Image (tube, rainbow, N blue to C red; front, side, top):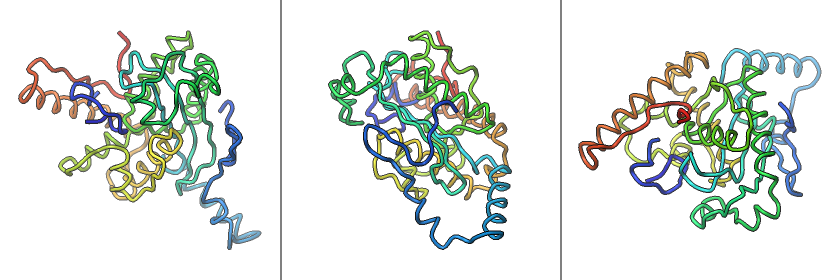
Length: 292
């Protein structure tokens, strides 16, 4: 079993603007470019035609939540949102074509050893994180501030299996005395939406499986940037093929996901109680689990 992003889990764990840089950023000596930028710029119209197209594209982006999306993903030390620590993070923006227009990436020293199982997933060792990572408290503060800045701009943020990333970020913020995000919204969770619109599709519902099903490239799974961007593109793909989802505003879709996730958790809880553990309880809280 996995948590929706590929971590191996048990059944009990199954459910459960500051600093932005543009499309080309410098990260640990490696320049990361928007791979579609050169292709889109070739054969581009000029002068008045180019201005007209830009205005049309801008109007389309402003008219629908999928035209400009925040994307967010964490890679961590484990699967327990109460105790796991952030190792890498990505927060960015993608436009209506899925191209990256803003991004920021972090490598943190989590302050604890990174278990071998986690390293096998995302590739970051304890030694590398200690050598190259920033202090965890500083990184957590920057991640919270950057996500908050996107919400303040009225832009929805995509996170695949949102209760994992947003709850873990909340706990990290509390751990380091950073004011956490307050009732973050609107959030788009392709895992919840996909289950709601295609309930009986067989097979896994991991990000890799969803990306393949919706025709979204994902060549570097479990890299925070690759996962975040792919999740955003999956959300856009779902909206393109599902008229009901496309018709909703971001706020309406957020509210629907609260309902859908609660129903999905109840269904899973019922299944677990009937087949494996009569006392099993699944959290129905979305997009963030309450702090005990």
